[in-house]
Every structure is written in C-alpha cells, then in structure tokens.
Amino acid sequence: MMPNQPDPITLDPRQRHAILVSAALVSLRGDTLKAVYRTALEEAFTTPELVELVLQSLLFDGYPCALEGLLTLKELQDDAYRPEDLFEPYLPATLKPWRDKGESLCRRIYGSNYEPLLRNVQGLSPTLKEWMLVEGYGRVLSRPSLPIDLRELGIIAILIVKNLPRQLHSHLRGALHVGVSPVELEAALRLCSNFATPQHLRAALEIWWKIYPPPSR
View 1 (cartoon, rainbow, N blue to C red):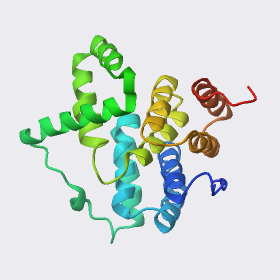
View 2 (tube, rainbow, N blue to C red):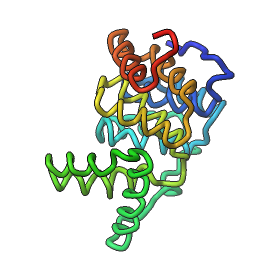
View 3 (cartoon, one colour):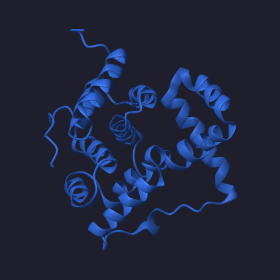
C-alpha cells in the first residue's frame, strides 16, 4: 500500500511525511512500514529526524510501538542509524529544565485551556500530571531535533488512527496554536484516510469541523 498523493500546494514534503510516517507507525509493520520510511528519507527527513518521529510515538501508543518502529528503521538504515547522536542523559540536573520546557510548551499548545487541563489531570492522578509535564512535553516533545509544528501533525495522525477523540480535539487546537494553518490541518486529516477506518476518519473530520466549521456547513 502506498499513500495517495495530496495537493502539493497544501502540504509540503516534510508535513506530508510527518503525517504518513506517524500514521504508518501505529498501523503498519515490516516491508510496508519500511517503504514509508524510505520515501520519507528520500524526500523530507534525515535519519535523526525520523528517529524523533518514532520516539514521540511512545507518548501515544506506548513503548512497544516506539521499539518496533526503531527496529524497523535500524533494519532499513543500519549504516546511518546512530542512536548515540541523539542521546540525552537522564540525570537529576535535567529534571527541572525538562519541567520548565514542558510547562512552556504545554501552555503554548493548550493556550487558555492550560490551567483547566492541569486541574483535570491532577484530579485523575497528580503523578500523571508530573509525567505529562516533565516526560511528555519536556523530555520528549521539547527536544529541538524536530519543529513542534511537525510534531503536532504527527501526533494528530496517530490520534486519528487510534481513534482518541478527546486528545485529537486538543491537539488540533494545539496545532493551530503553533502555526499550522486550517487548510493544512484539513489536508492532514484527509491524508490519514490511507490508514484510518472510514468511521474514524469521519469522526476526526466532525471534530475538526466543530473547531473550524467549513463555509458550506
């Protein structure tokens, strides 16, 4: 299976492949995932940037997804795959900077909903709130190896395929906050038709249309 071609005016190659790689990570294995990787490496990303897209998948589909994704990439690019180049030591001194970066990025993505988000997650689990800020938004999503707008497009693709509507709603708004245009976001959602079920894609579009209603609706 190879993805349909989107309107090249709407999505640039890096946006397109951030979406395709992320959707493929949670739905494909083996040679089909390698084919998506190969095209992304030829047209849009370096190996370290592709590693970053795989690493962030652990926040939305767990360590098994990230591990399998990295194993597939290593099989494809063994000579160019140098994970030590991206290593960041896990030390006590890094925790506060990660939390500071996490708070800043989470506030940027959620905007006026940042404080309600923290209260809601605190009510579910104070531990999870800390992990979200330090590990999620700090240690993972604040890494400078990939711009946050591309990260958000990848996240949206995963959430569509996994059918997680609450998180999708938040990250669609977050993508707008970090500079992804409405036209680009709708194109991103439709590009996921190669990986999501028709029902999940329709649900995602309905969420998007509540945020940004099209003129004809």
